[in-house]
Length: 404
Image (cartoon, rainbow, N blue to C red; front, side, top):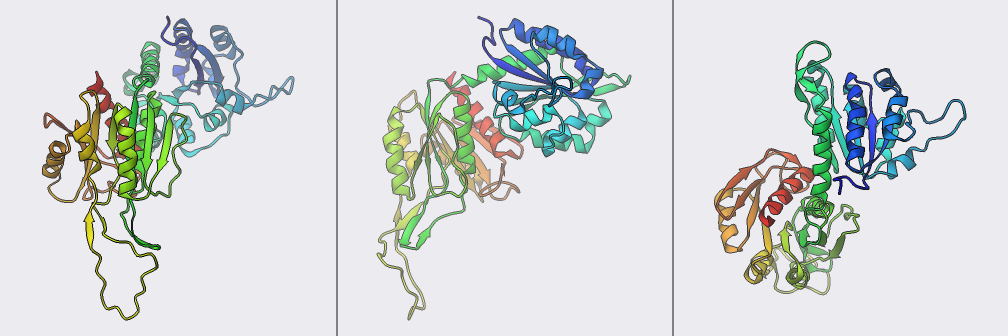
């Protein structure tokens, strides 16, 4: 069976000289069983004609919102929603900028803004334009977006006669990236994972609690990444202010306290293929909770007696089967590697994700994180600061490597 059998791929062509290679890419996609629809910018018609693209794709090619002769409307919404993947190649510096900042002044850009599908972007331009800080910033913005893949430009001879980085990868290379993308989507098909996320709140009285600043962003990103690869996910979330993931494969279980999270995980874990414990669970809870709001009148001090909460990851580590994988998190301020390594062993984890509040851009509430993965062999893999969606990819990649 062809690698892309039945896949609907929307190819967006912008106005760069590399557009002349797109008919070859389309032929390769169709040979692999894909159905290809092309949208091109008006400028791209200077490099490759609609007739050529229509001939190889066997479909009409769209570049304007309206047909000038008939007045027919080309719905960008219909085009945007009728694909499994959108590939923008070549993506010029101008198009990259507009993609990054949400401009929609042509049909291709409007389709991009409207599509819920994953997007693969293939930059192509002259070396100085590619290396310009503005272009590199736009590439970073797009790379950090959920469901976006930005391919790296290649080194080589450019249309200007210069040699350097900026060449669009060859159609065969782009095809392999597309095939790999769809293969990756099924890597966890049939698997079920439990993910914990957010803080827990331990009630003192009806209006006060002991908690922390966890936003849930890291755990939610992990749940979405697992689901995007075909897994069924049980997301056990403490109280958060961000929207819950909207994915048919993710079931959200809302809890408040550490005990509630413990009970939910204990119920779900035995039937799962593993768990990722990303929640910031309170270590202690008040021994007793007041039924009414505690008043401060006539009080110069107030003491709360605390007792330990269960260690959810450690408890699941004791009962996990040989075919289950457990992943923990260690948010540290001091002696991070030593503390994380101890938790790796004491909780019987397959690997642990270390991050430090001392690293700028890491920790609670941020959109980014900087992690180190430590596995059972004490092998340490250090990653640069990235958006939490990309961090989730790194974590799930490591998890998948252990399943092989």
